[in-house]
Structure formats: C-alpha cells, structure tokens
Image 1 (cartoon, rainbow, N blue to C red):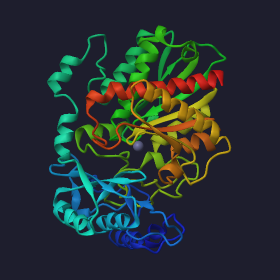
Image 2 (image 1 turned 45 degrees about the vertical axis):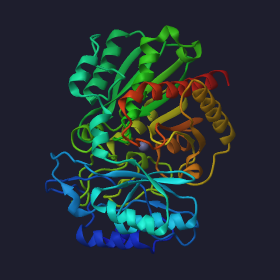
Image 3 (image 1 turned 180 degrees about the vertical axis):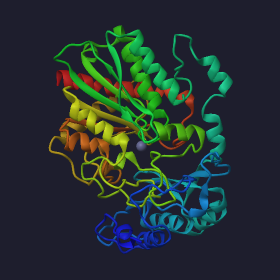
Length: 475
Ligand SMILES: [Zn+2]
C-alpha cells in the first residue's frame, strides 16, 4: 500500500477532496511499477480537465484537475463504448457564482470539462446525470446551452459511412483523402507511398515503436540543401483529436504532391513530420472508445490504462496541471519519458543533426495558437517574437476565410499544464519557435469535428506552418 505516494499530489497545497479520493484509490488499488498481471479493462472515458471542487488556498483562480474515473464504469477491452444520450453543455463562467455552480456540478456529478475560455466552459455530461445537473444550474440561475444533444449521434455521423469512404479513396497507390478520417494503416500507407514515389525529396523512418508495438513514422521532406533549416511537426499525440493527423497529412500532401506551387522558402525547409504520435490511442479511438485521450500503457494500478503523452516530456515534468493518478486523463506517467512514444521523440532529437528552428504540435480543440510556457504562468525572454509570429499568422488565417484563432502563452491564456512537448522543445532543446496549435472548432462539435471541415481547418494550419517557415527563413 502506498497511500503517501499516491496522495502526494504535485501541487503545493494538497488538502482537498482530490487528495481524499487519491487515498481511497490507494487503499483499493496499491500503486505498482509493474503492469497488472490480470486482464486489463478498458475505461469509459470522459474525464478531461476538471475543476477542483474546492479552490486551492493560495489561488483565486480555479485549478484544473482530473477526477479519477469510477471503477464501476470499466468495460471489457473489446466492447465499444457508446455515448448515447451524453451531452456537451456550454455554461457561462464569468463570475464567481457561476464558477461555484460549475465546481458544484463537477463535485456532485463527476462531470468532465472539455474546454475553458474567459467566459464559458464546455462540460461533458453522461446521460444519467443530465436531469439533476440541469436542475442544479437552473436553481443557481446559471445560463447554459446544450451544444451537442447526443454525443453518440455526433460520433456516428462525423465520418462518412464506410461505403462512401471506399468510393472516396483515390486509386493513386494510396488510400488517403481529406474528406474522411482514416485509420492508421491508411496514414502510414500514404507515408510509404510518398517515400516510394518521390524518393528524391521524401524519406520515411520509424523513430521507435509504441507500447503496443506500432511504428512511429516520421516523413522527412527535403531538397537536400545542407544549409536548410528544419521544422518539426507532430499530430495525434492525443488520440481523440482526429482533426490533428488529418490536418498534418494535408500539409504533407501540399508539401509533396503540390511542391511546385509552394513558395521557395517552404521548399527550402527540411520538414520532419510525425502525423500520429500516439498510434495505439488513435486506433483505440477508432475501434473502442472515440473519446480516448492517452496512450495505451497497461494499467499501473490494476484499473486504468494510459499515460497522457503530452504530460510526459521532461521539462518541468510533473508540476502543475499534471496528475499522478493513473486513472486521470492527465496522468503524467511514472517518470519523465517513461513512455516509448515520448522517449522516441527525445531519442530522435538527440540523434538528429538537423537545424531545428520550429516545433509545431497540432491538437484540438478551441482555436488557439499557444506558445511556452505551459508549465506555469510565465513567458520566455523572447515571447514577443513568438507572440508576433502567432498574431501575424492568425491574421492571415482569418483573412483567407478561415476561423479566428486566439494567440498567447498556454499557461496564462488557458491554464498551466506541465510536461508538454512544446515546453520541452523550447526549454530543453532550445528550439526558438515552439507552438501548440489547438485546431477547430470553438465548441460546437468539440472533439467530434465533422469530416467535411477537414480541408478548411487544414488550410488554416498550412498558413500557420508556412508563416513559421517564412519567419525562420527571412526573419
Ligand atoms: Zn490535445
């Protein structure tokens, strides 16, 4: 039994309900450094970022934490998770009364937060709690909108039906389209196709394997000029953010298949692109649980799978906004780079001789261009340059007919989250332009962005990546 280890939260102030929950977990499920020998169970996934039911003593800001998942929600690994009747609500969040009501909602009903901005929060509610949650908000006179009234319906209709996808597949030697979300084999097959078809500019390499043994494929696109600067792009580190791999592969398509149309400063960059940084999680979202976020690390406590790979990088690892609880959505892992997926990125950068000037990690959702630091509400000394690039890009994205993106340091604009890859890129690798881009949308569909928005979202992202390329080339 290791209650002290489990209850020793990373944060300075620990006396709150979360700690009590940790102790309960510790009593029921001792922490082990080894995976459980028993058959692991899959988890109904909903808890994302949850405000502590009680504010921390030294802060007037709400802290964003995870709830541990309920044990009785576990389901068998092979059983697809259904979200019939589950809803996404947008709740006003602009004064203390409303914040207290939201905290109450979380405390009483274990409701998960999907997104947060200055005036509202997006909360995900399972069907059984909806009636009582509605009553609570109505009694507190807190306005809210139901933005998704049946999450399962949204999931069932976000992608075209399989027979339509089959018709969409082109016959050029690969199966990728940007009219549908594709399985990992289609994405990886596309990278292999490009390497075989354009060997003079493309090569593909596996930088390591996921915990379940899937390759982490990086496509390098380069004209071979030794003086080129390099840009890293990754997608899909959070499994359920399907728009991210779709967008990243769209950028690849432009860089390779439409190469002659691209500006010279784009052709003179060495691009290193990892479209699916969490391949096990990605496949799991297609086969079992559409809302899975983490990797598929077998349970370390006999109950809950997965580590949040974007809390597992080794710069200020395990500080604010990361959890030690294996059942939490932001479980940081047992140590920095404990996960093969994040370790592979570390090893890749340590081996690489490329002149990396930018590190871009694509996520969803919320429409944000975020730069370090994420681990706290500080900014790096050159933050004005990062901010200027972000704002100039956001203007271009909007001008092109795209969506509006907010720009700022992630720890201040949103909330502190330590162990992120962008902080590590900046803080450890010393790469100047590190960004996390939260793609569409701003909350109407959340993580379940319909496939008919892939291309318009991708075009915005392409504009951002090109602005980065232009800046590092011309200043
Ligand atoms: Zn994400």
